[in-house]
Length: 114
Length: 111
Image 1 (tube, each protein chain N blue to C red):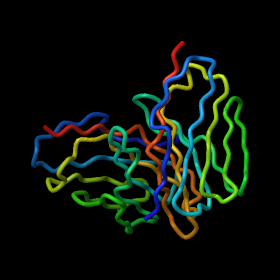
Image 2: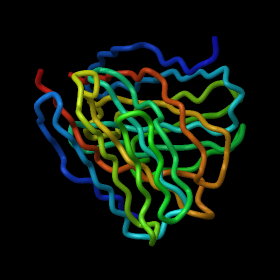
Image 3: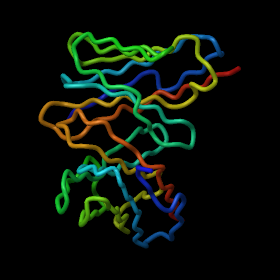
Image 4: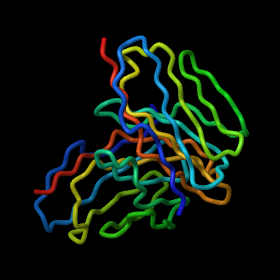
């Protein structure tokens, strides 16, 4: 059963702590993406990776970090430098296609920082 | 940078009424995609338009891509409660490997 998994579904952390969100896909897609969704703000791109061991900053990368050591995995770390980390985080993957690729989304992780 | 504007932000209709959401880009697009996100869910791909003036239909949904490839619309005929959700457009550009999403239109349908 192919798809994208994100874990956990809900995550609570204290302010000042780093937290890592998991994203795994078995679709054999080369490209993976992280988005942040806030109410009324749509989807904002944090980081993306077109190939293993390479990634680029998106529109709102400050306070976040990623790694891409395996094709199947693209974890996102929300660092203590992120001023307002509470949000819904969505991971997506696609076959690279110069902006024409269809993106497949995971179920998302809701992060609440207290 | 590129901007994709989507209106309206929110619309509440009675079941059976029609609904339309509009998407406008600040730059010419190579393609436009539409996604639907149900409440509490994640975005799911609906369709992609590539050609200037293209029109595609999926049952009660009609998608259009403008002649200048800078705007698009999604029209739902005779809405049903199952149409509830947020509809996003996303624009792609030649030479760029990412999409720019609009902020979405939230549709609420009352029975």
